[in-house]
Image (cartoon, rainbow, N blue to C red; front, side, top):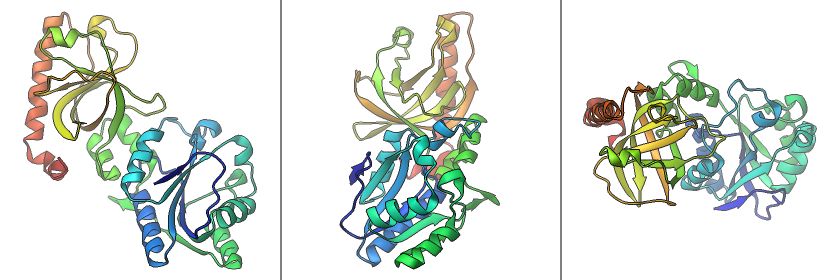
Length: 316
């Protein structure tokens, strides 16, 4: 996959393009990308996913929760797995946000990208003060011989699937619904760092992950998780929090993997979240913490053995 992160986006080969923020790559986003790939295949075009970095919400400050469901590297990882030819993370700035919508469509998308088919969501807005929409793209496209197609919003339980809805699910600890809307379980990719090694002394060695700070994490607490390392999947429990029992002060993500005994400092792992087990709490002693970790592990194992996990079992 070609990956472009600057303004040098010119394409010599004709393209089929979809545009959006694509945070989370949920079922609605995947519908856009799937249709783009279909047109690319049918009309011998290159498939292009066009998005922005940083996410506009960080500069426009128009979101209550300014954090990403997927960090940039995580999004790139998934888009590449979807079989896209070219992935563009166009630099976003306040100056760029003030561009007239006609200029954005004609110069960037139609000309520089050599676009022949453009796919957007029905609610897509762009350009200065979000004044551009599908109707404008359609009118401009007709003048340029570009086929512009909109994809209706995807609904789940009669409500529109959106990144905002998924953020709210994560904040409310509704991991199950977030995962359904995402089509793959919410995950964190991060590098393993050394921690305090307390878990090792009480029989629960943990892997500490350094994740992207722009990412939205679920509330502090303990979750049933699956971690992928070296192509293998390990069940476990993950704690997001500050380790109050041992006077922790900064957020950490630490995972205890069942039947895992390797040292993996400096390596990158991917952890999928499935079910909230309990909130973070401070225990009277390290022994009380150890006993609670035993109960947490038992609950996670019961979940992974239950029918509730069946919808995901084929993936693992």
